[in-house]
Amino acid sequence: MLHSHAEIRRRIDALGPWFHNMELAGVETAPNHFLGNYPLIKWRKFAEAIPADLTGKTVLDIGCNAGFYSIEMKRRGAARVLGIDFDEAYLAQARFAAEIANCEIEFQKLSVYDVGALRETFDIVLFMGVLYHLRHPLLALDLIREHVAGDLMIFQSMQRGSTDLPEMEENYHFWTHDLFDRPEFPKLHFIEHRYADDPTNWWIPNRACTEAMLRSAGFEIVLHPEQEVYFCRAAGDPASGGPVYPSKGQRHD
Image (cartoon, rainbow, N blue to C red; front, side, top):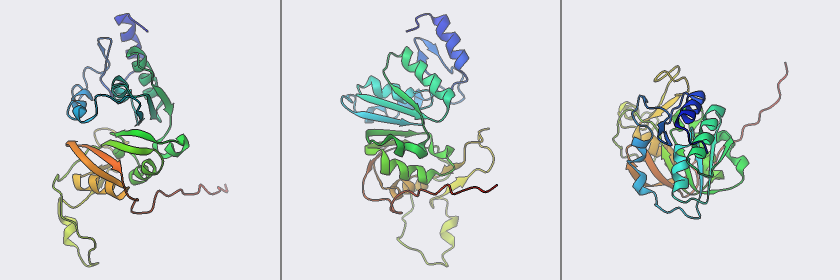
């Protein structure tokens, strides 16, 4: 454990820039975050919906970034917390943050598309702030549902557009056109270039689309404690019957 504030500050600076603002032994990692004290301000809006005692529970934090949520789960007594991310810089931050917080958390470099390689299910899956960074968002939800969601998934996504929920019919005639112009119709907005200066912001759903995608992947929404946050349980089968596994094929140069 590092106790010197000066040394912690030096390590924070060396590991930066940070997206998670975290207080490590009194030293903030991103005090000038454009979203404010993030993700603490987000966490406080739904933290009470999560049991205060997670003794014996296993947790998978997908796209863990610097480990803010992983640490919060461990502080509530989770028996095992695994944080995964594909970015080595974020994983280095997460390991350092967990060290300073004195939390025993496992971190692995792994993409959400490869969660099947874990070969285990978890009591709680955190899938926070990842969906809109993915080229294949519905595939990611399908893979989570099939491979790692043992019970509860806590999901969050940036949302734009209408927050209204339409009454949807089971089927529509081919010549039905007007519903696609309705703001509340489920829409997944595609960002070809950048949004908020981030080239990985690919898709931004409206509320109806978020909820429809969760249901389509085989999740039941049981709680909506914050505008962008959903508590879901694995229930029923995905609409497509499960994720697809495309062959890589052979290249002939």
